[in-house]
Every structure is written in structure tokens, then in C-alpha cells.
Length: 260
Image 1 (cartoon, helix red, strand yellow):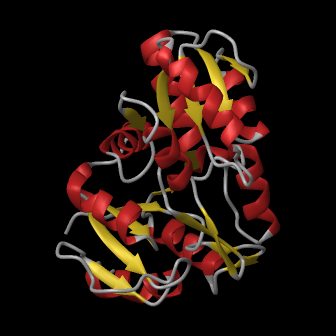
Image 2: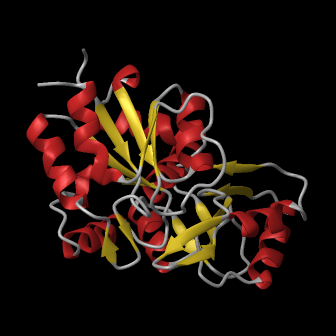
């Protein structure tokens, strides 16, 4: 049987807020010991890749920055492929601005000519930003949203995600909004290309039915739903490969599916 490779979501799968998921660091070491390659994939735009790596290290994970593929990198590459160096009006955190500028894009939070309106996670997005974005779209700017997740887990609190912000702008414009992150196929293709994994042997592990599991199913990936993080409710969707209580159960699952 072909050895698997894994895409692993981060928020709610490897940690919740400021605490690692039970046995999370051990699970990644288990995958290394078995020679099963993995890539951490995330829709978060509140932290850049270095910040995500630092947080994981502080929580006891041994992880290299190259093993993390955040949506901020996918969005930056998407803009570069279409505009070269894009003029961006940004709704989002400074960490996203830093990633965009590292790719050569310019970033503004003021009303000025723009090629793209880029929407990332912001803890307190405001309607003033959406008002500016609407006028920029009328002037020809295209809207790039990093994802449209309705919520995200912050320790014991489930906070409003990027989805409501995207919906607010969407209701005021006629143009379509390009979604970069999960569950959009663009993200999975970008991650496959980045990691060099084979589609047929890659398994997506996530806690979000909509973003992780349904996105993986539509893209043709095997997938595992874990019960941590957003605590998915409702029936497991058709096409879900497996369901585990948390990523702590992954080694036992691998031993059953891919015996030594």
C-alpha cells in the first residue's frame, strides 16, 4: 500500500488557543519516524509563517518553517501571478501586510488607487474599511479574500471569522470575490505543488467540515475529521475517509491502515 502524506490543519487540530492538543507534538514525531511526510496548512492570516512556527515551538512542537503553508503565502503568490507587484488595499492584520510586502506588493490602508482589495482575518474589522473597499471595487479593483470561514477557535471562545466580513462587502458590490484558502481548490492545488505530494496518497486532517473535509472531498483528497477545535456537529459527510476524536488517535489509525 502506498505510504501516505498528510495535510494537517493547525487551529483546533494541533492547538486550541494557548495549549497544544493532547499528544500533538508526539504525533508529528510519530509521522517523522514512520517516514510519512506532512505539511501544516492553515487559513489563518492573523500570524505570518514565522509567528506560527514560533507559537508551535513554544507549545512543544519541533517544526521547521518550510513545513508550514499558510494561506497568506498562497494569496501572495496568487497576486504575483496576476499582477506582478500588486497595489493592495488591506483589511487585515499587520502580519498579512508583512507577507504581502515580502512578495513585492505594496499595501495601503487608505483610500488610494488599488489593483486588489485583500481581506484577511481582523479581530475587529469595521464598516469604514468595507465602505472604502466598495468604492475601490467600483474603480476597478478586484477582491481577494483569504477565506470565508464563519468562525475560528480562540481557546475556549469561538470567535466570528472572516466570512461575515466577506459577506458584508459581497452584499454591496456586483463583482465576484476570489477566495484563496480552504475549501477553495486553488489552495489545495497550491499546497500540493508546494509540497510535491501525490494527490492520490495525500490525506487532509482537519476539524472543520466545511473548510477541511468538504474542501478535501471536492478536490479528491482522502480526509480525516477530528473532533477537537470547532467541535463539528451534525452528520459526517459522505466521502469522509475517517473520523477520530483528536489527532492523538492518528498513530493508532496509521498502524491499522499502514502496518509496518
